[in-house]
Image 1: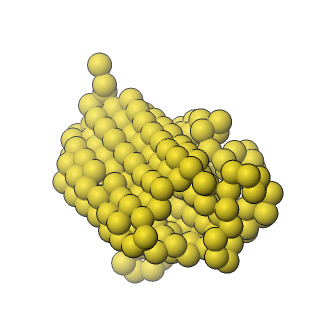
Image 2: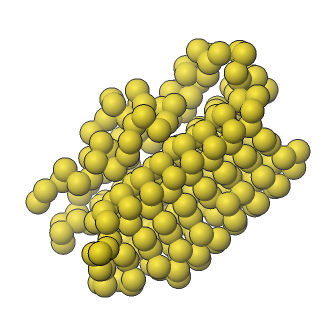
Image 3: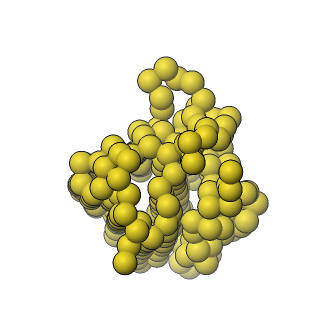
Length: 223
């Protein structure tokens, strides 16, 4: 089985995130999840105080970012230039919100990295996940990050299970992925670059790049 499609370098453009060095240190993207907290703390200490303000314990917010007063922010957290954190967003910590990214109304974010230009704008749960450059989740999209039996998460690819060795793992969205409204990305979902997911989808395992996911078992190539 070819696992190269699952490599972080084949999902993400590292130049589109402040966390480039983190991704250069791993092969599979989910290997970065356990490193996010310490990475954010150490990176935050090096940020230019002319660009970022430290607000609270291990929270760094770019001066050009917009954070609504009703948003809840918990560290460690970095909010990058021109990002927007909207009304009643709930950021639980161990997170990076990339340049120009949007965390929207009543969206919950924890132990996740949003690359530059990502939009999670309406009633989303993004947990233990990584969203690539300019990826977007429609209203109500959920990254389910814990299996019901609490066992370790696997990634289904080509009919085989790839062991990840971790208990909490939501979704890896490659660059330019579009997820339709009210979709559920089950634990261990990995979606290749430039792929579209239909609304109301139930997604599991690896979805190839440059494709359209219509429903379980029905995936079309983009023309």
